[in-house]
Length: 413
Image (cartoon, rainbow, N blue to C red):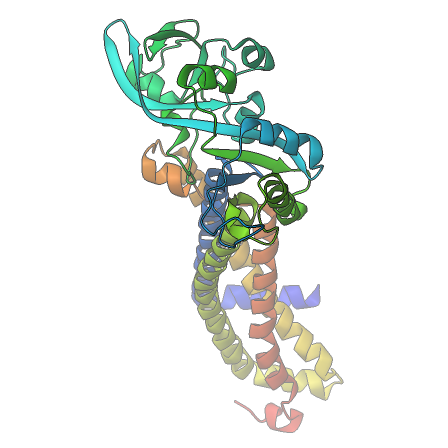
């Protein structure tokens, strides 16, 4: 308590100097808060964009042999069928769900004289959940009954709806023609930010039951398949099991990696997440440098304070004050200076974040980079850095004060 009172008197005596020092710490703290928060917002938004194509999924395309095997030559094309995928689903326990994906790249849809070329995809009901195709309110995705009865129903992307029916229109229940065959719209995909794709953005896609697609277009082989492993940590094992099934089914070398090509989105998301965290750390370092500069200012002030209070220190040591008392006094003063400035900086940073969120900014750039996010983790990081700076700026001046010779200090003017 005595040390706090001394700090209060010092603050009154040197108002301008102490206020300017605290403002420097305040700005440095606000800077690091903003940098870390912008990095966190960028990380969360880009991760959301990466996962919008589907969480914990693997996309697989048929390949061709690169090794001769059992009398078969190199370069033999390997194509799996829907029946193959059904067998994989039943025989490979490492795969939780799997769906073929038939793709017709340019197909004309019609409605009352309106024509539009779009992409038609034939899939199973589980494909919609795996690929994060969330329907808008009042609609749905393809279900098992649609598949079993080969119903002529269609689920459309939000961009297709906007261009074909008009923005915001609910087309559920309306009829459109695909290859002059009428289909009923059963749902519209809810708008999402997508930063990953392998056959174009989902907003421009129309999906119909795989059974209906095969009947209409007489296409036996899917363009690719999508599956989800039962355990994301065993994704590579699931891919090996898929490849070995094809090798056994089509008499290929089990060690031939070229018979199927996999895109492991689990690994991609993890890798890109590490890159984004690296960017966030870099931004935090930039903000931290500003706080370190402010800390240097605090250290300089403490050195000046030690010099001005040399005689006072000598008197305290002459009457029995131990060096640890002198050190703790100046360290506490440095911590109080940094703490007050830091608290003001945190309040300023959070206030600026609140202002950014309140701004009515809606454009593609903001949707892509997101908005600053202040989280408890950032509060912990900021407080840790602040405490370290406070200790660092107080220890060295305090050590110098504790080494003052009492006799020389009493003679100091």
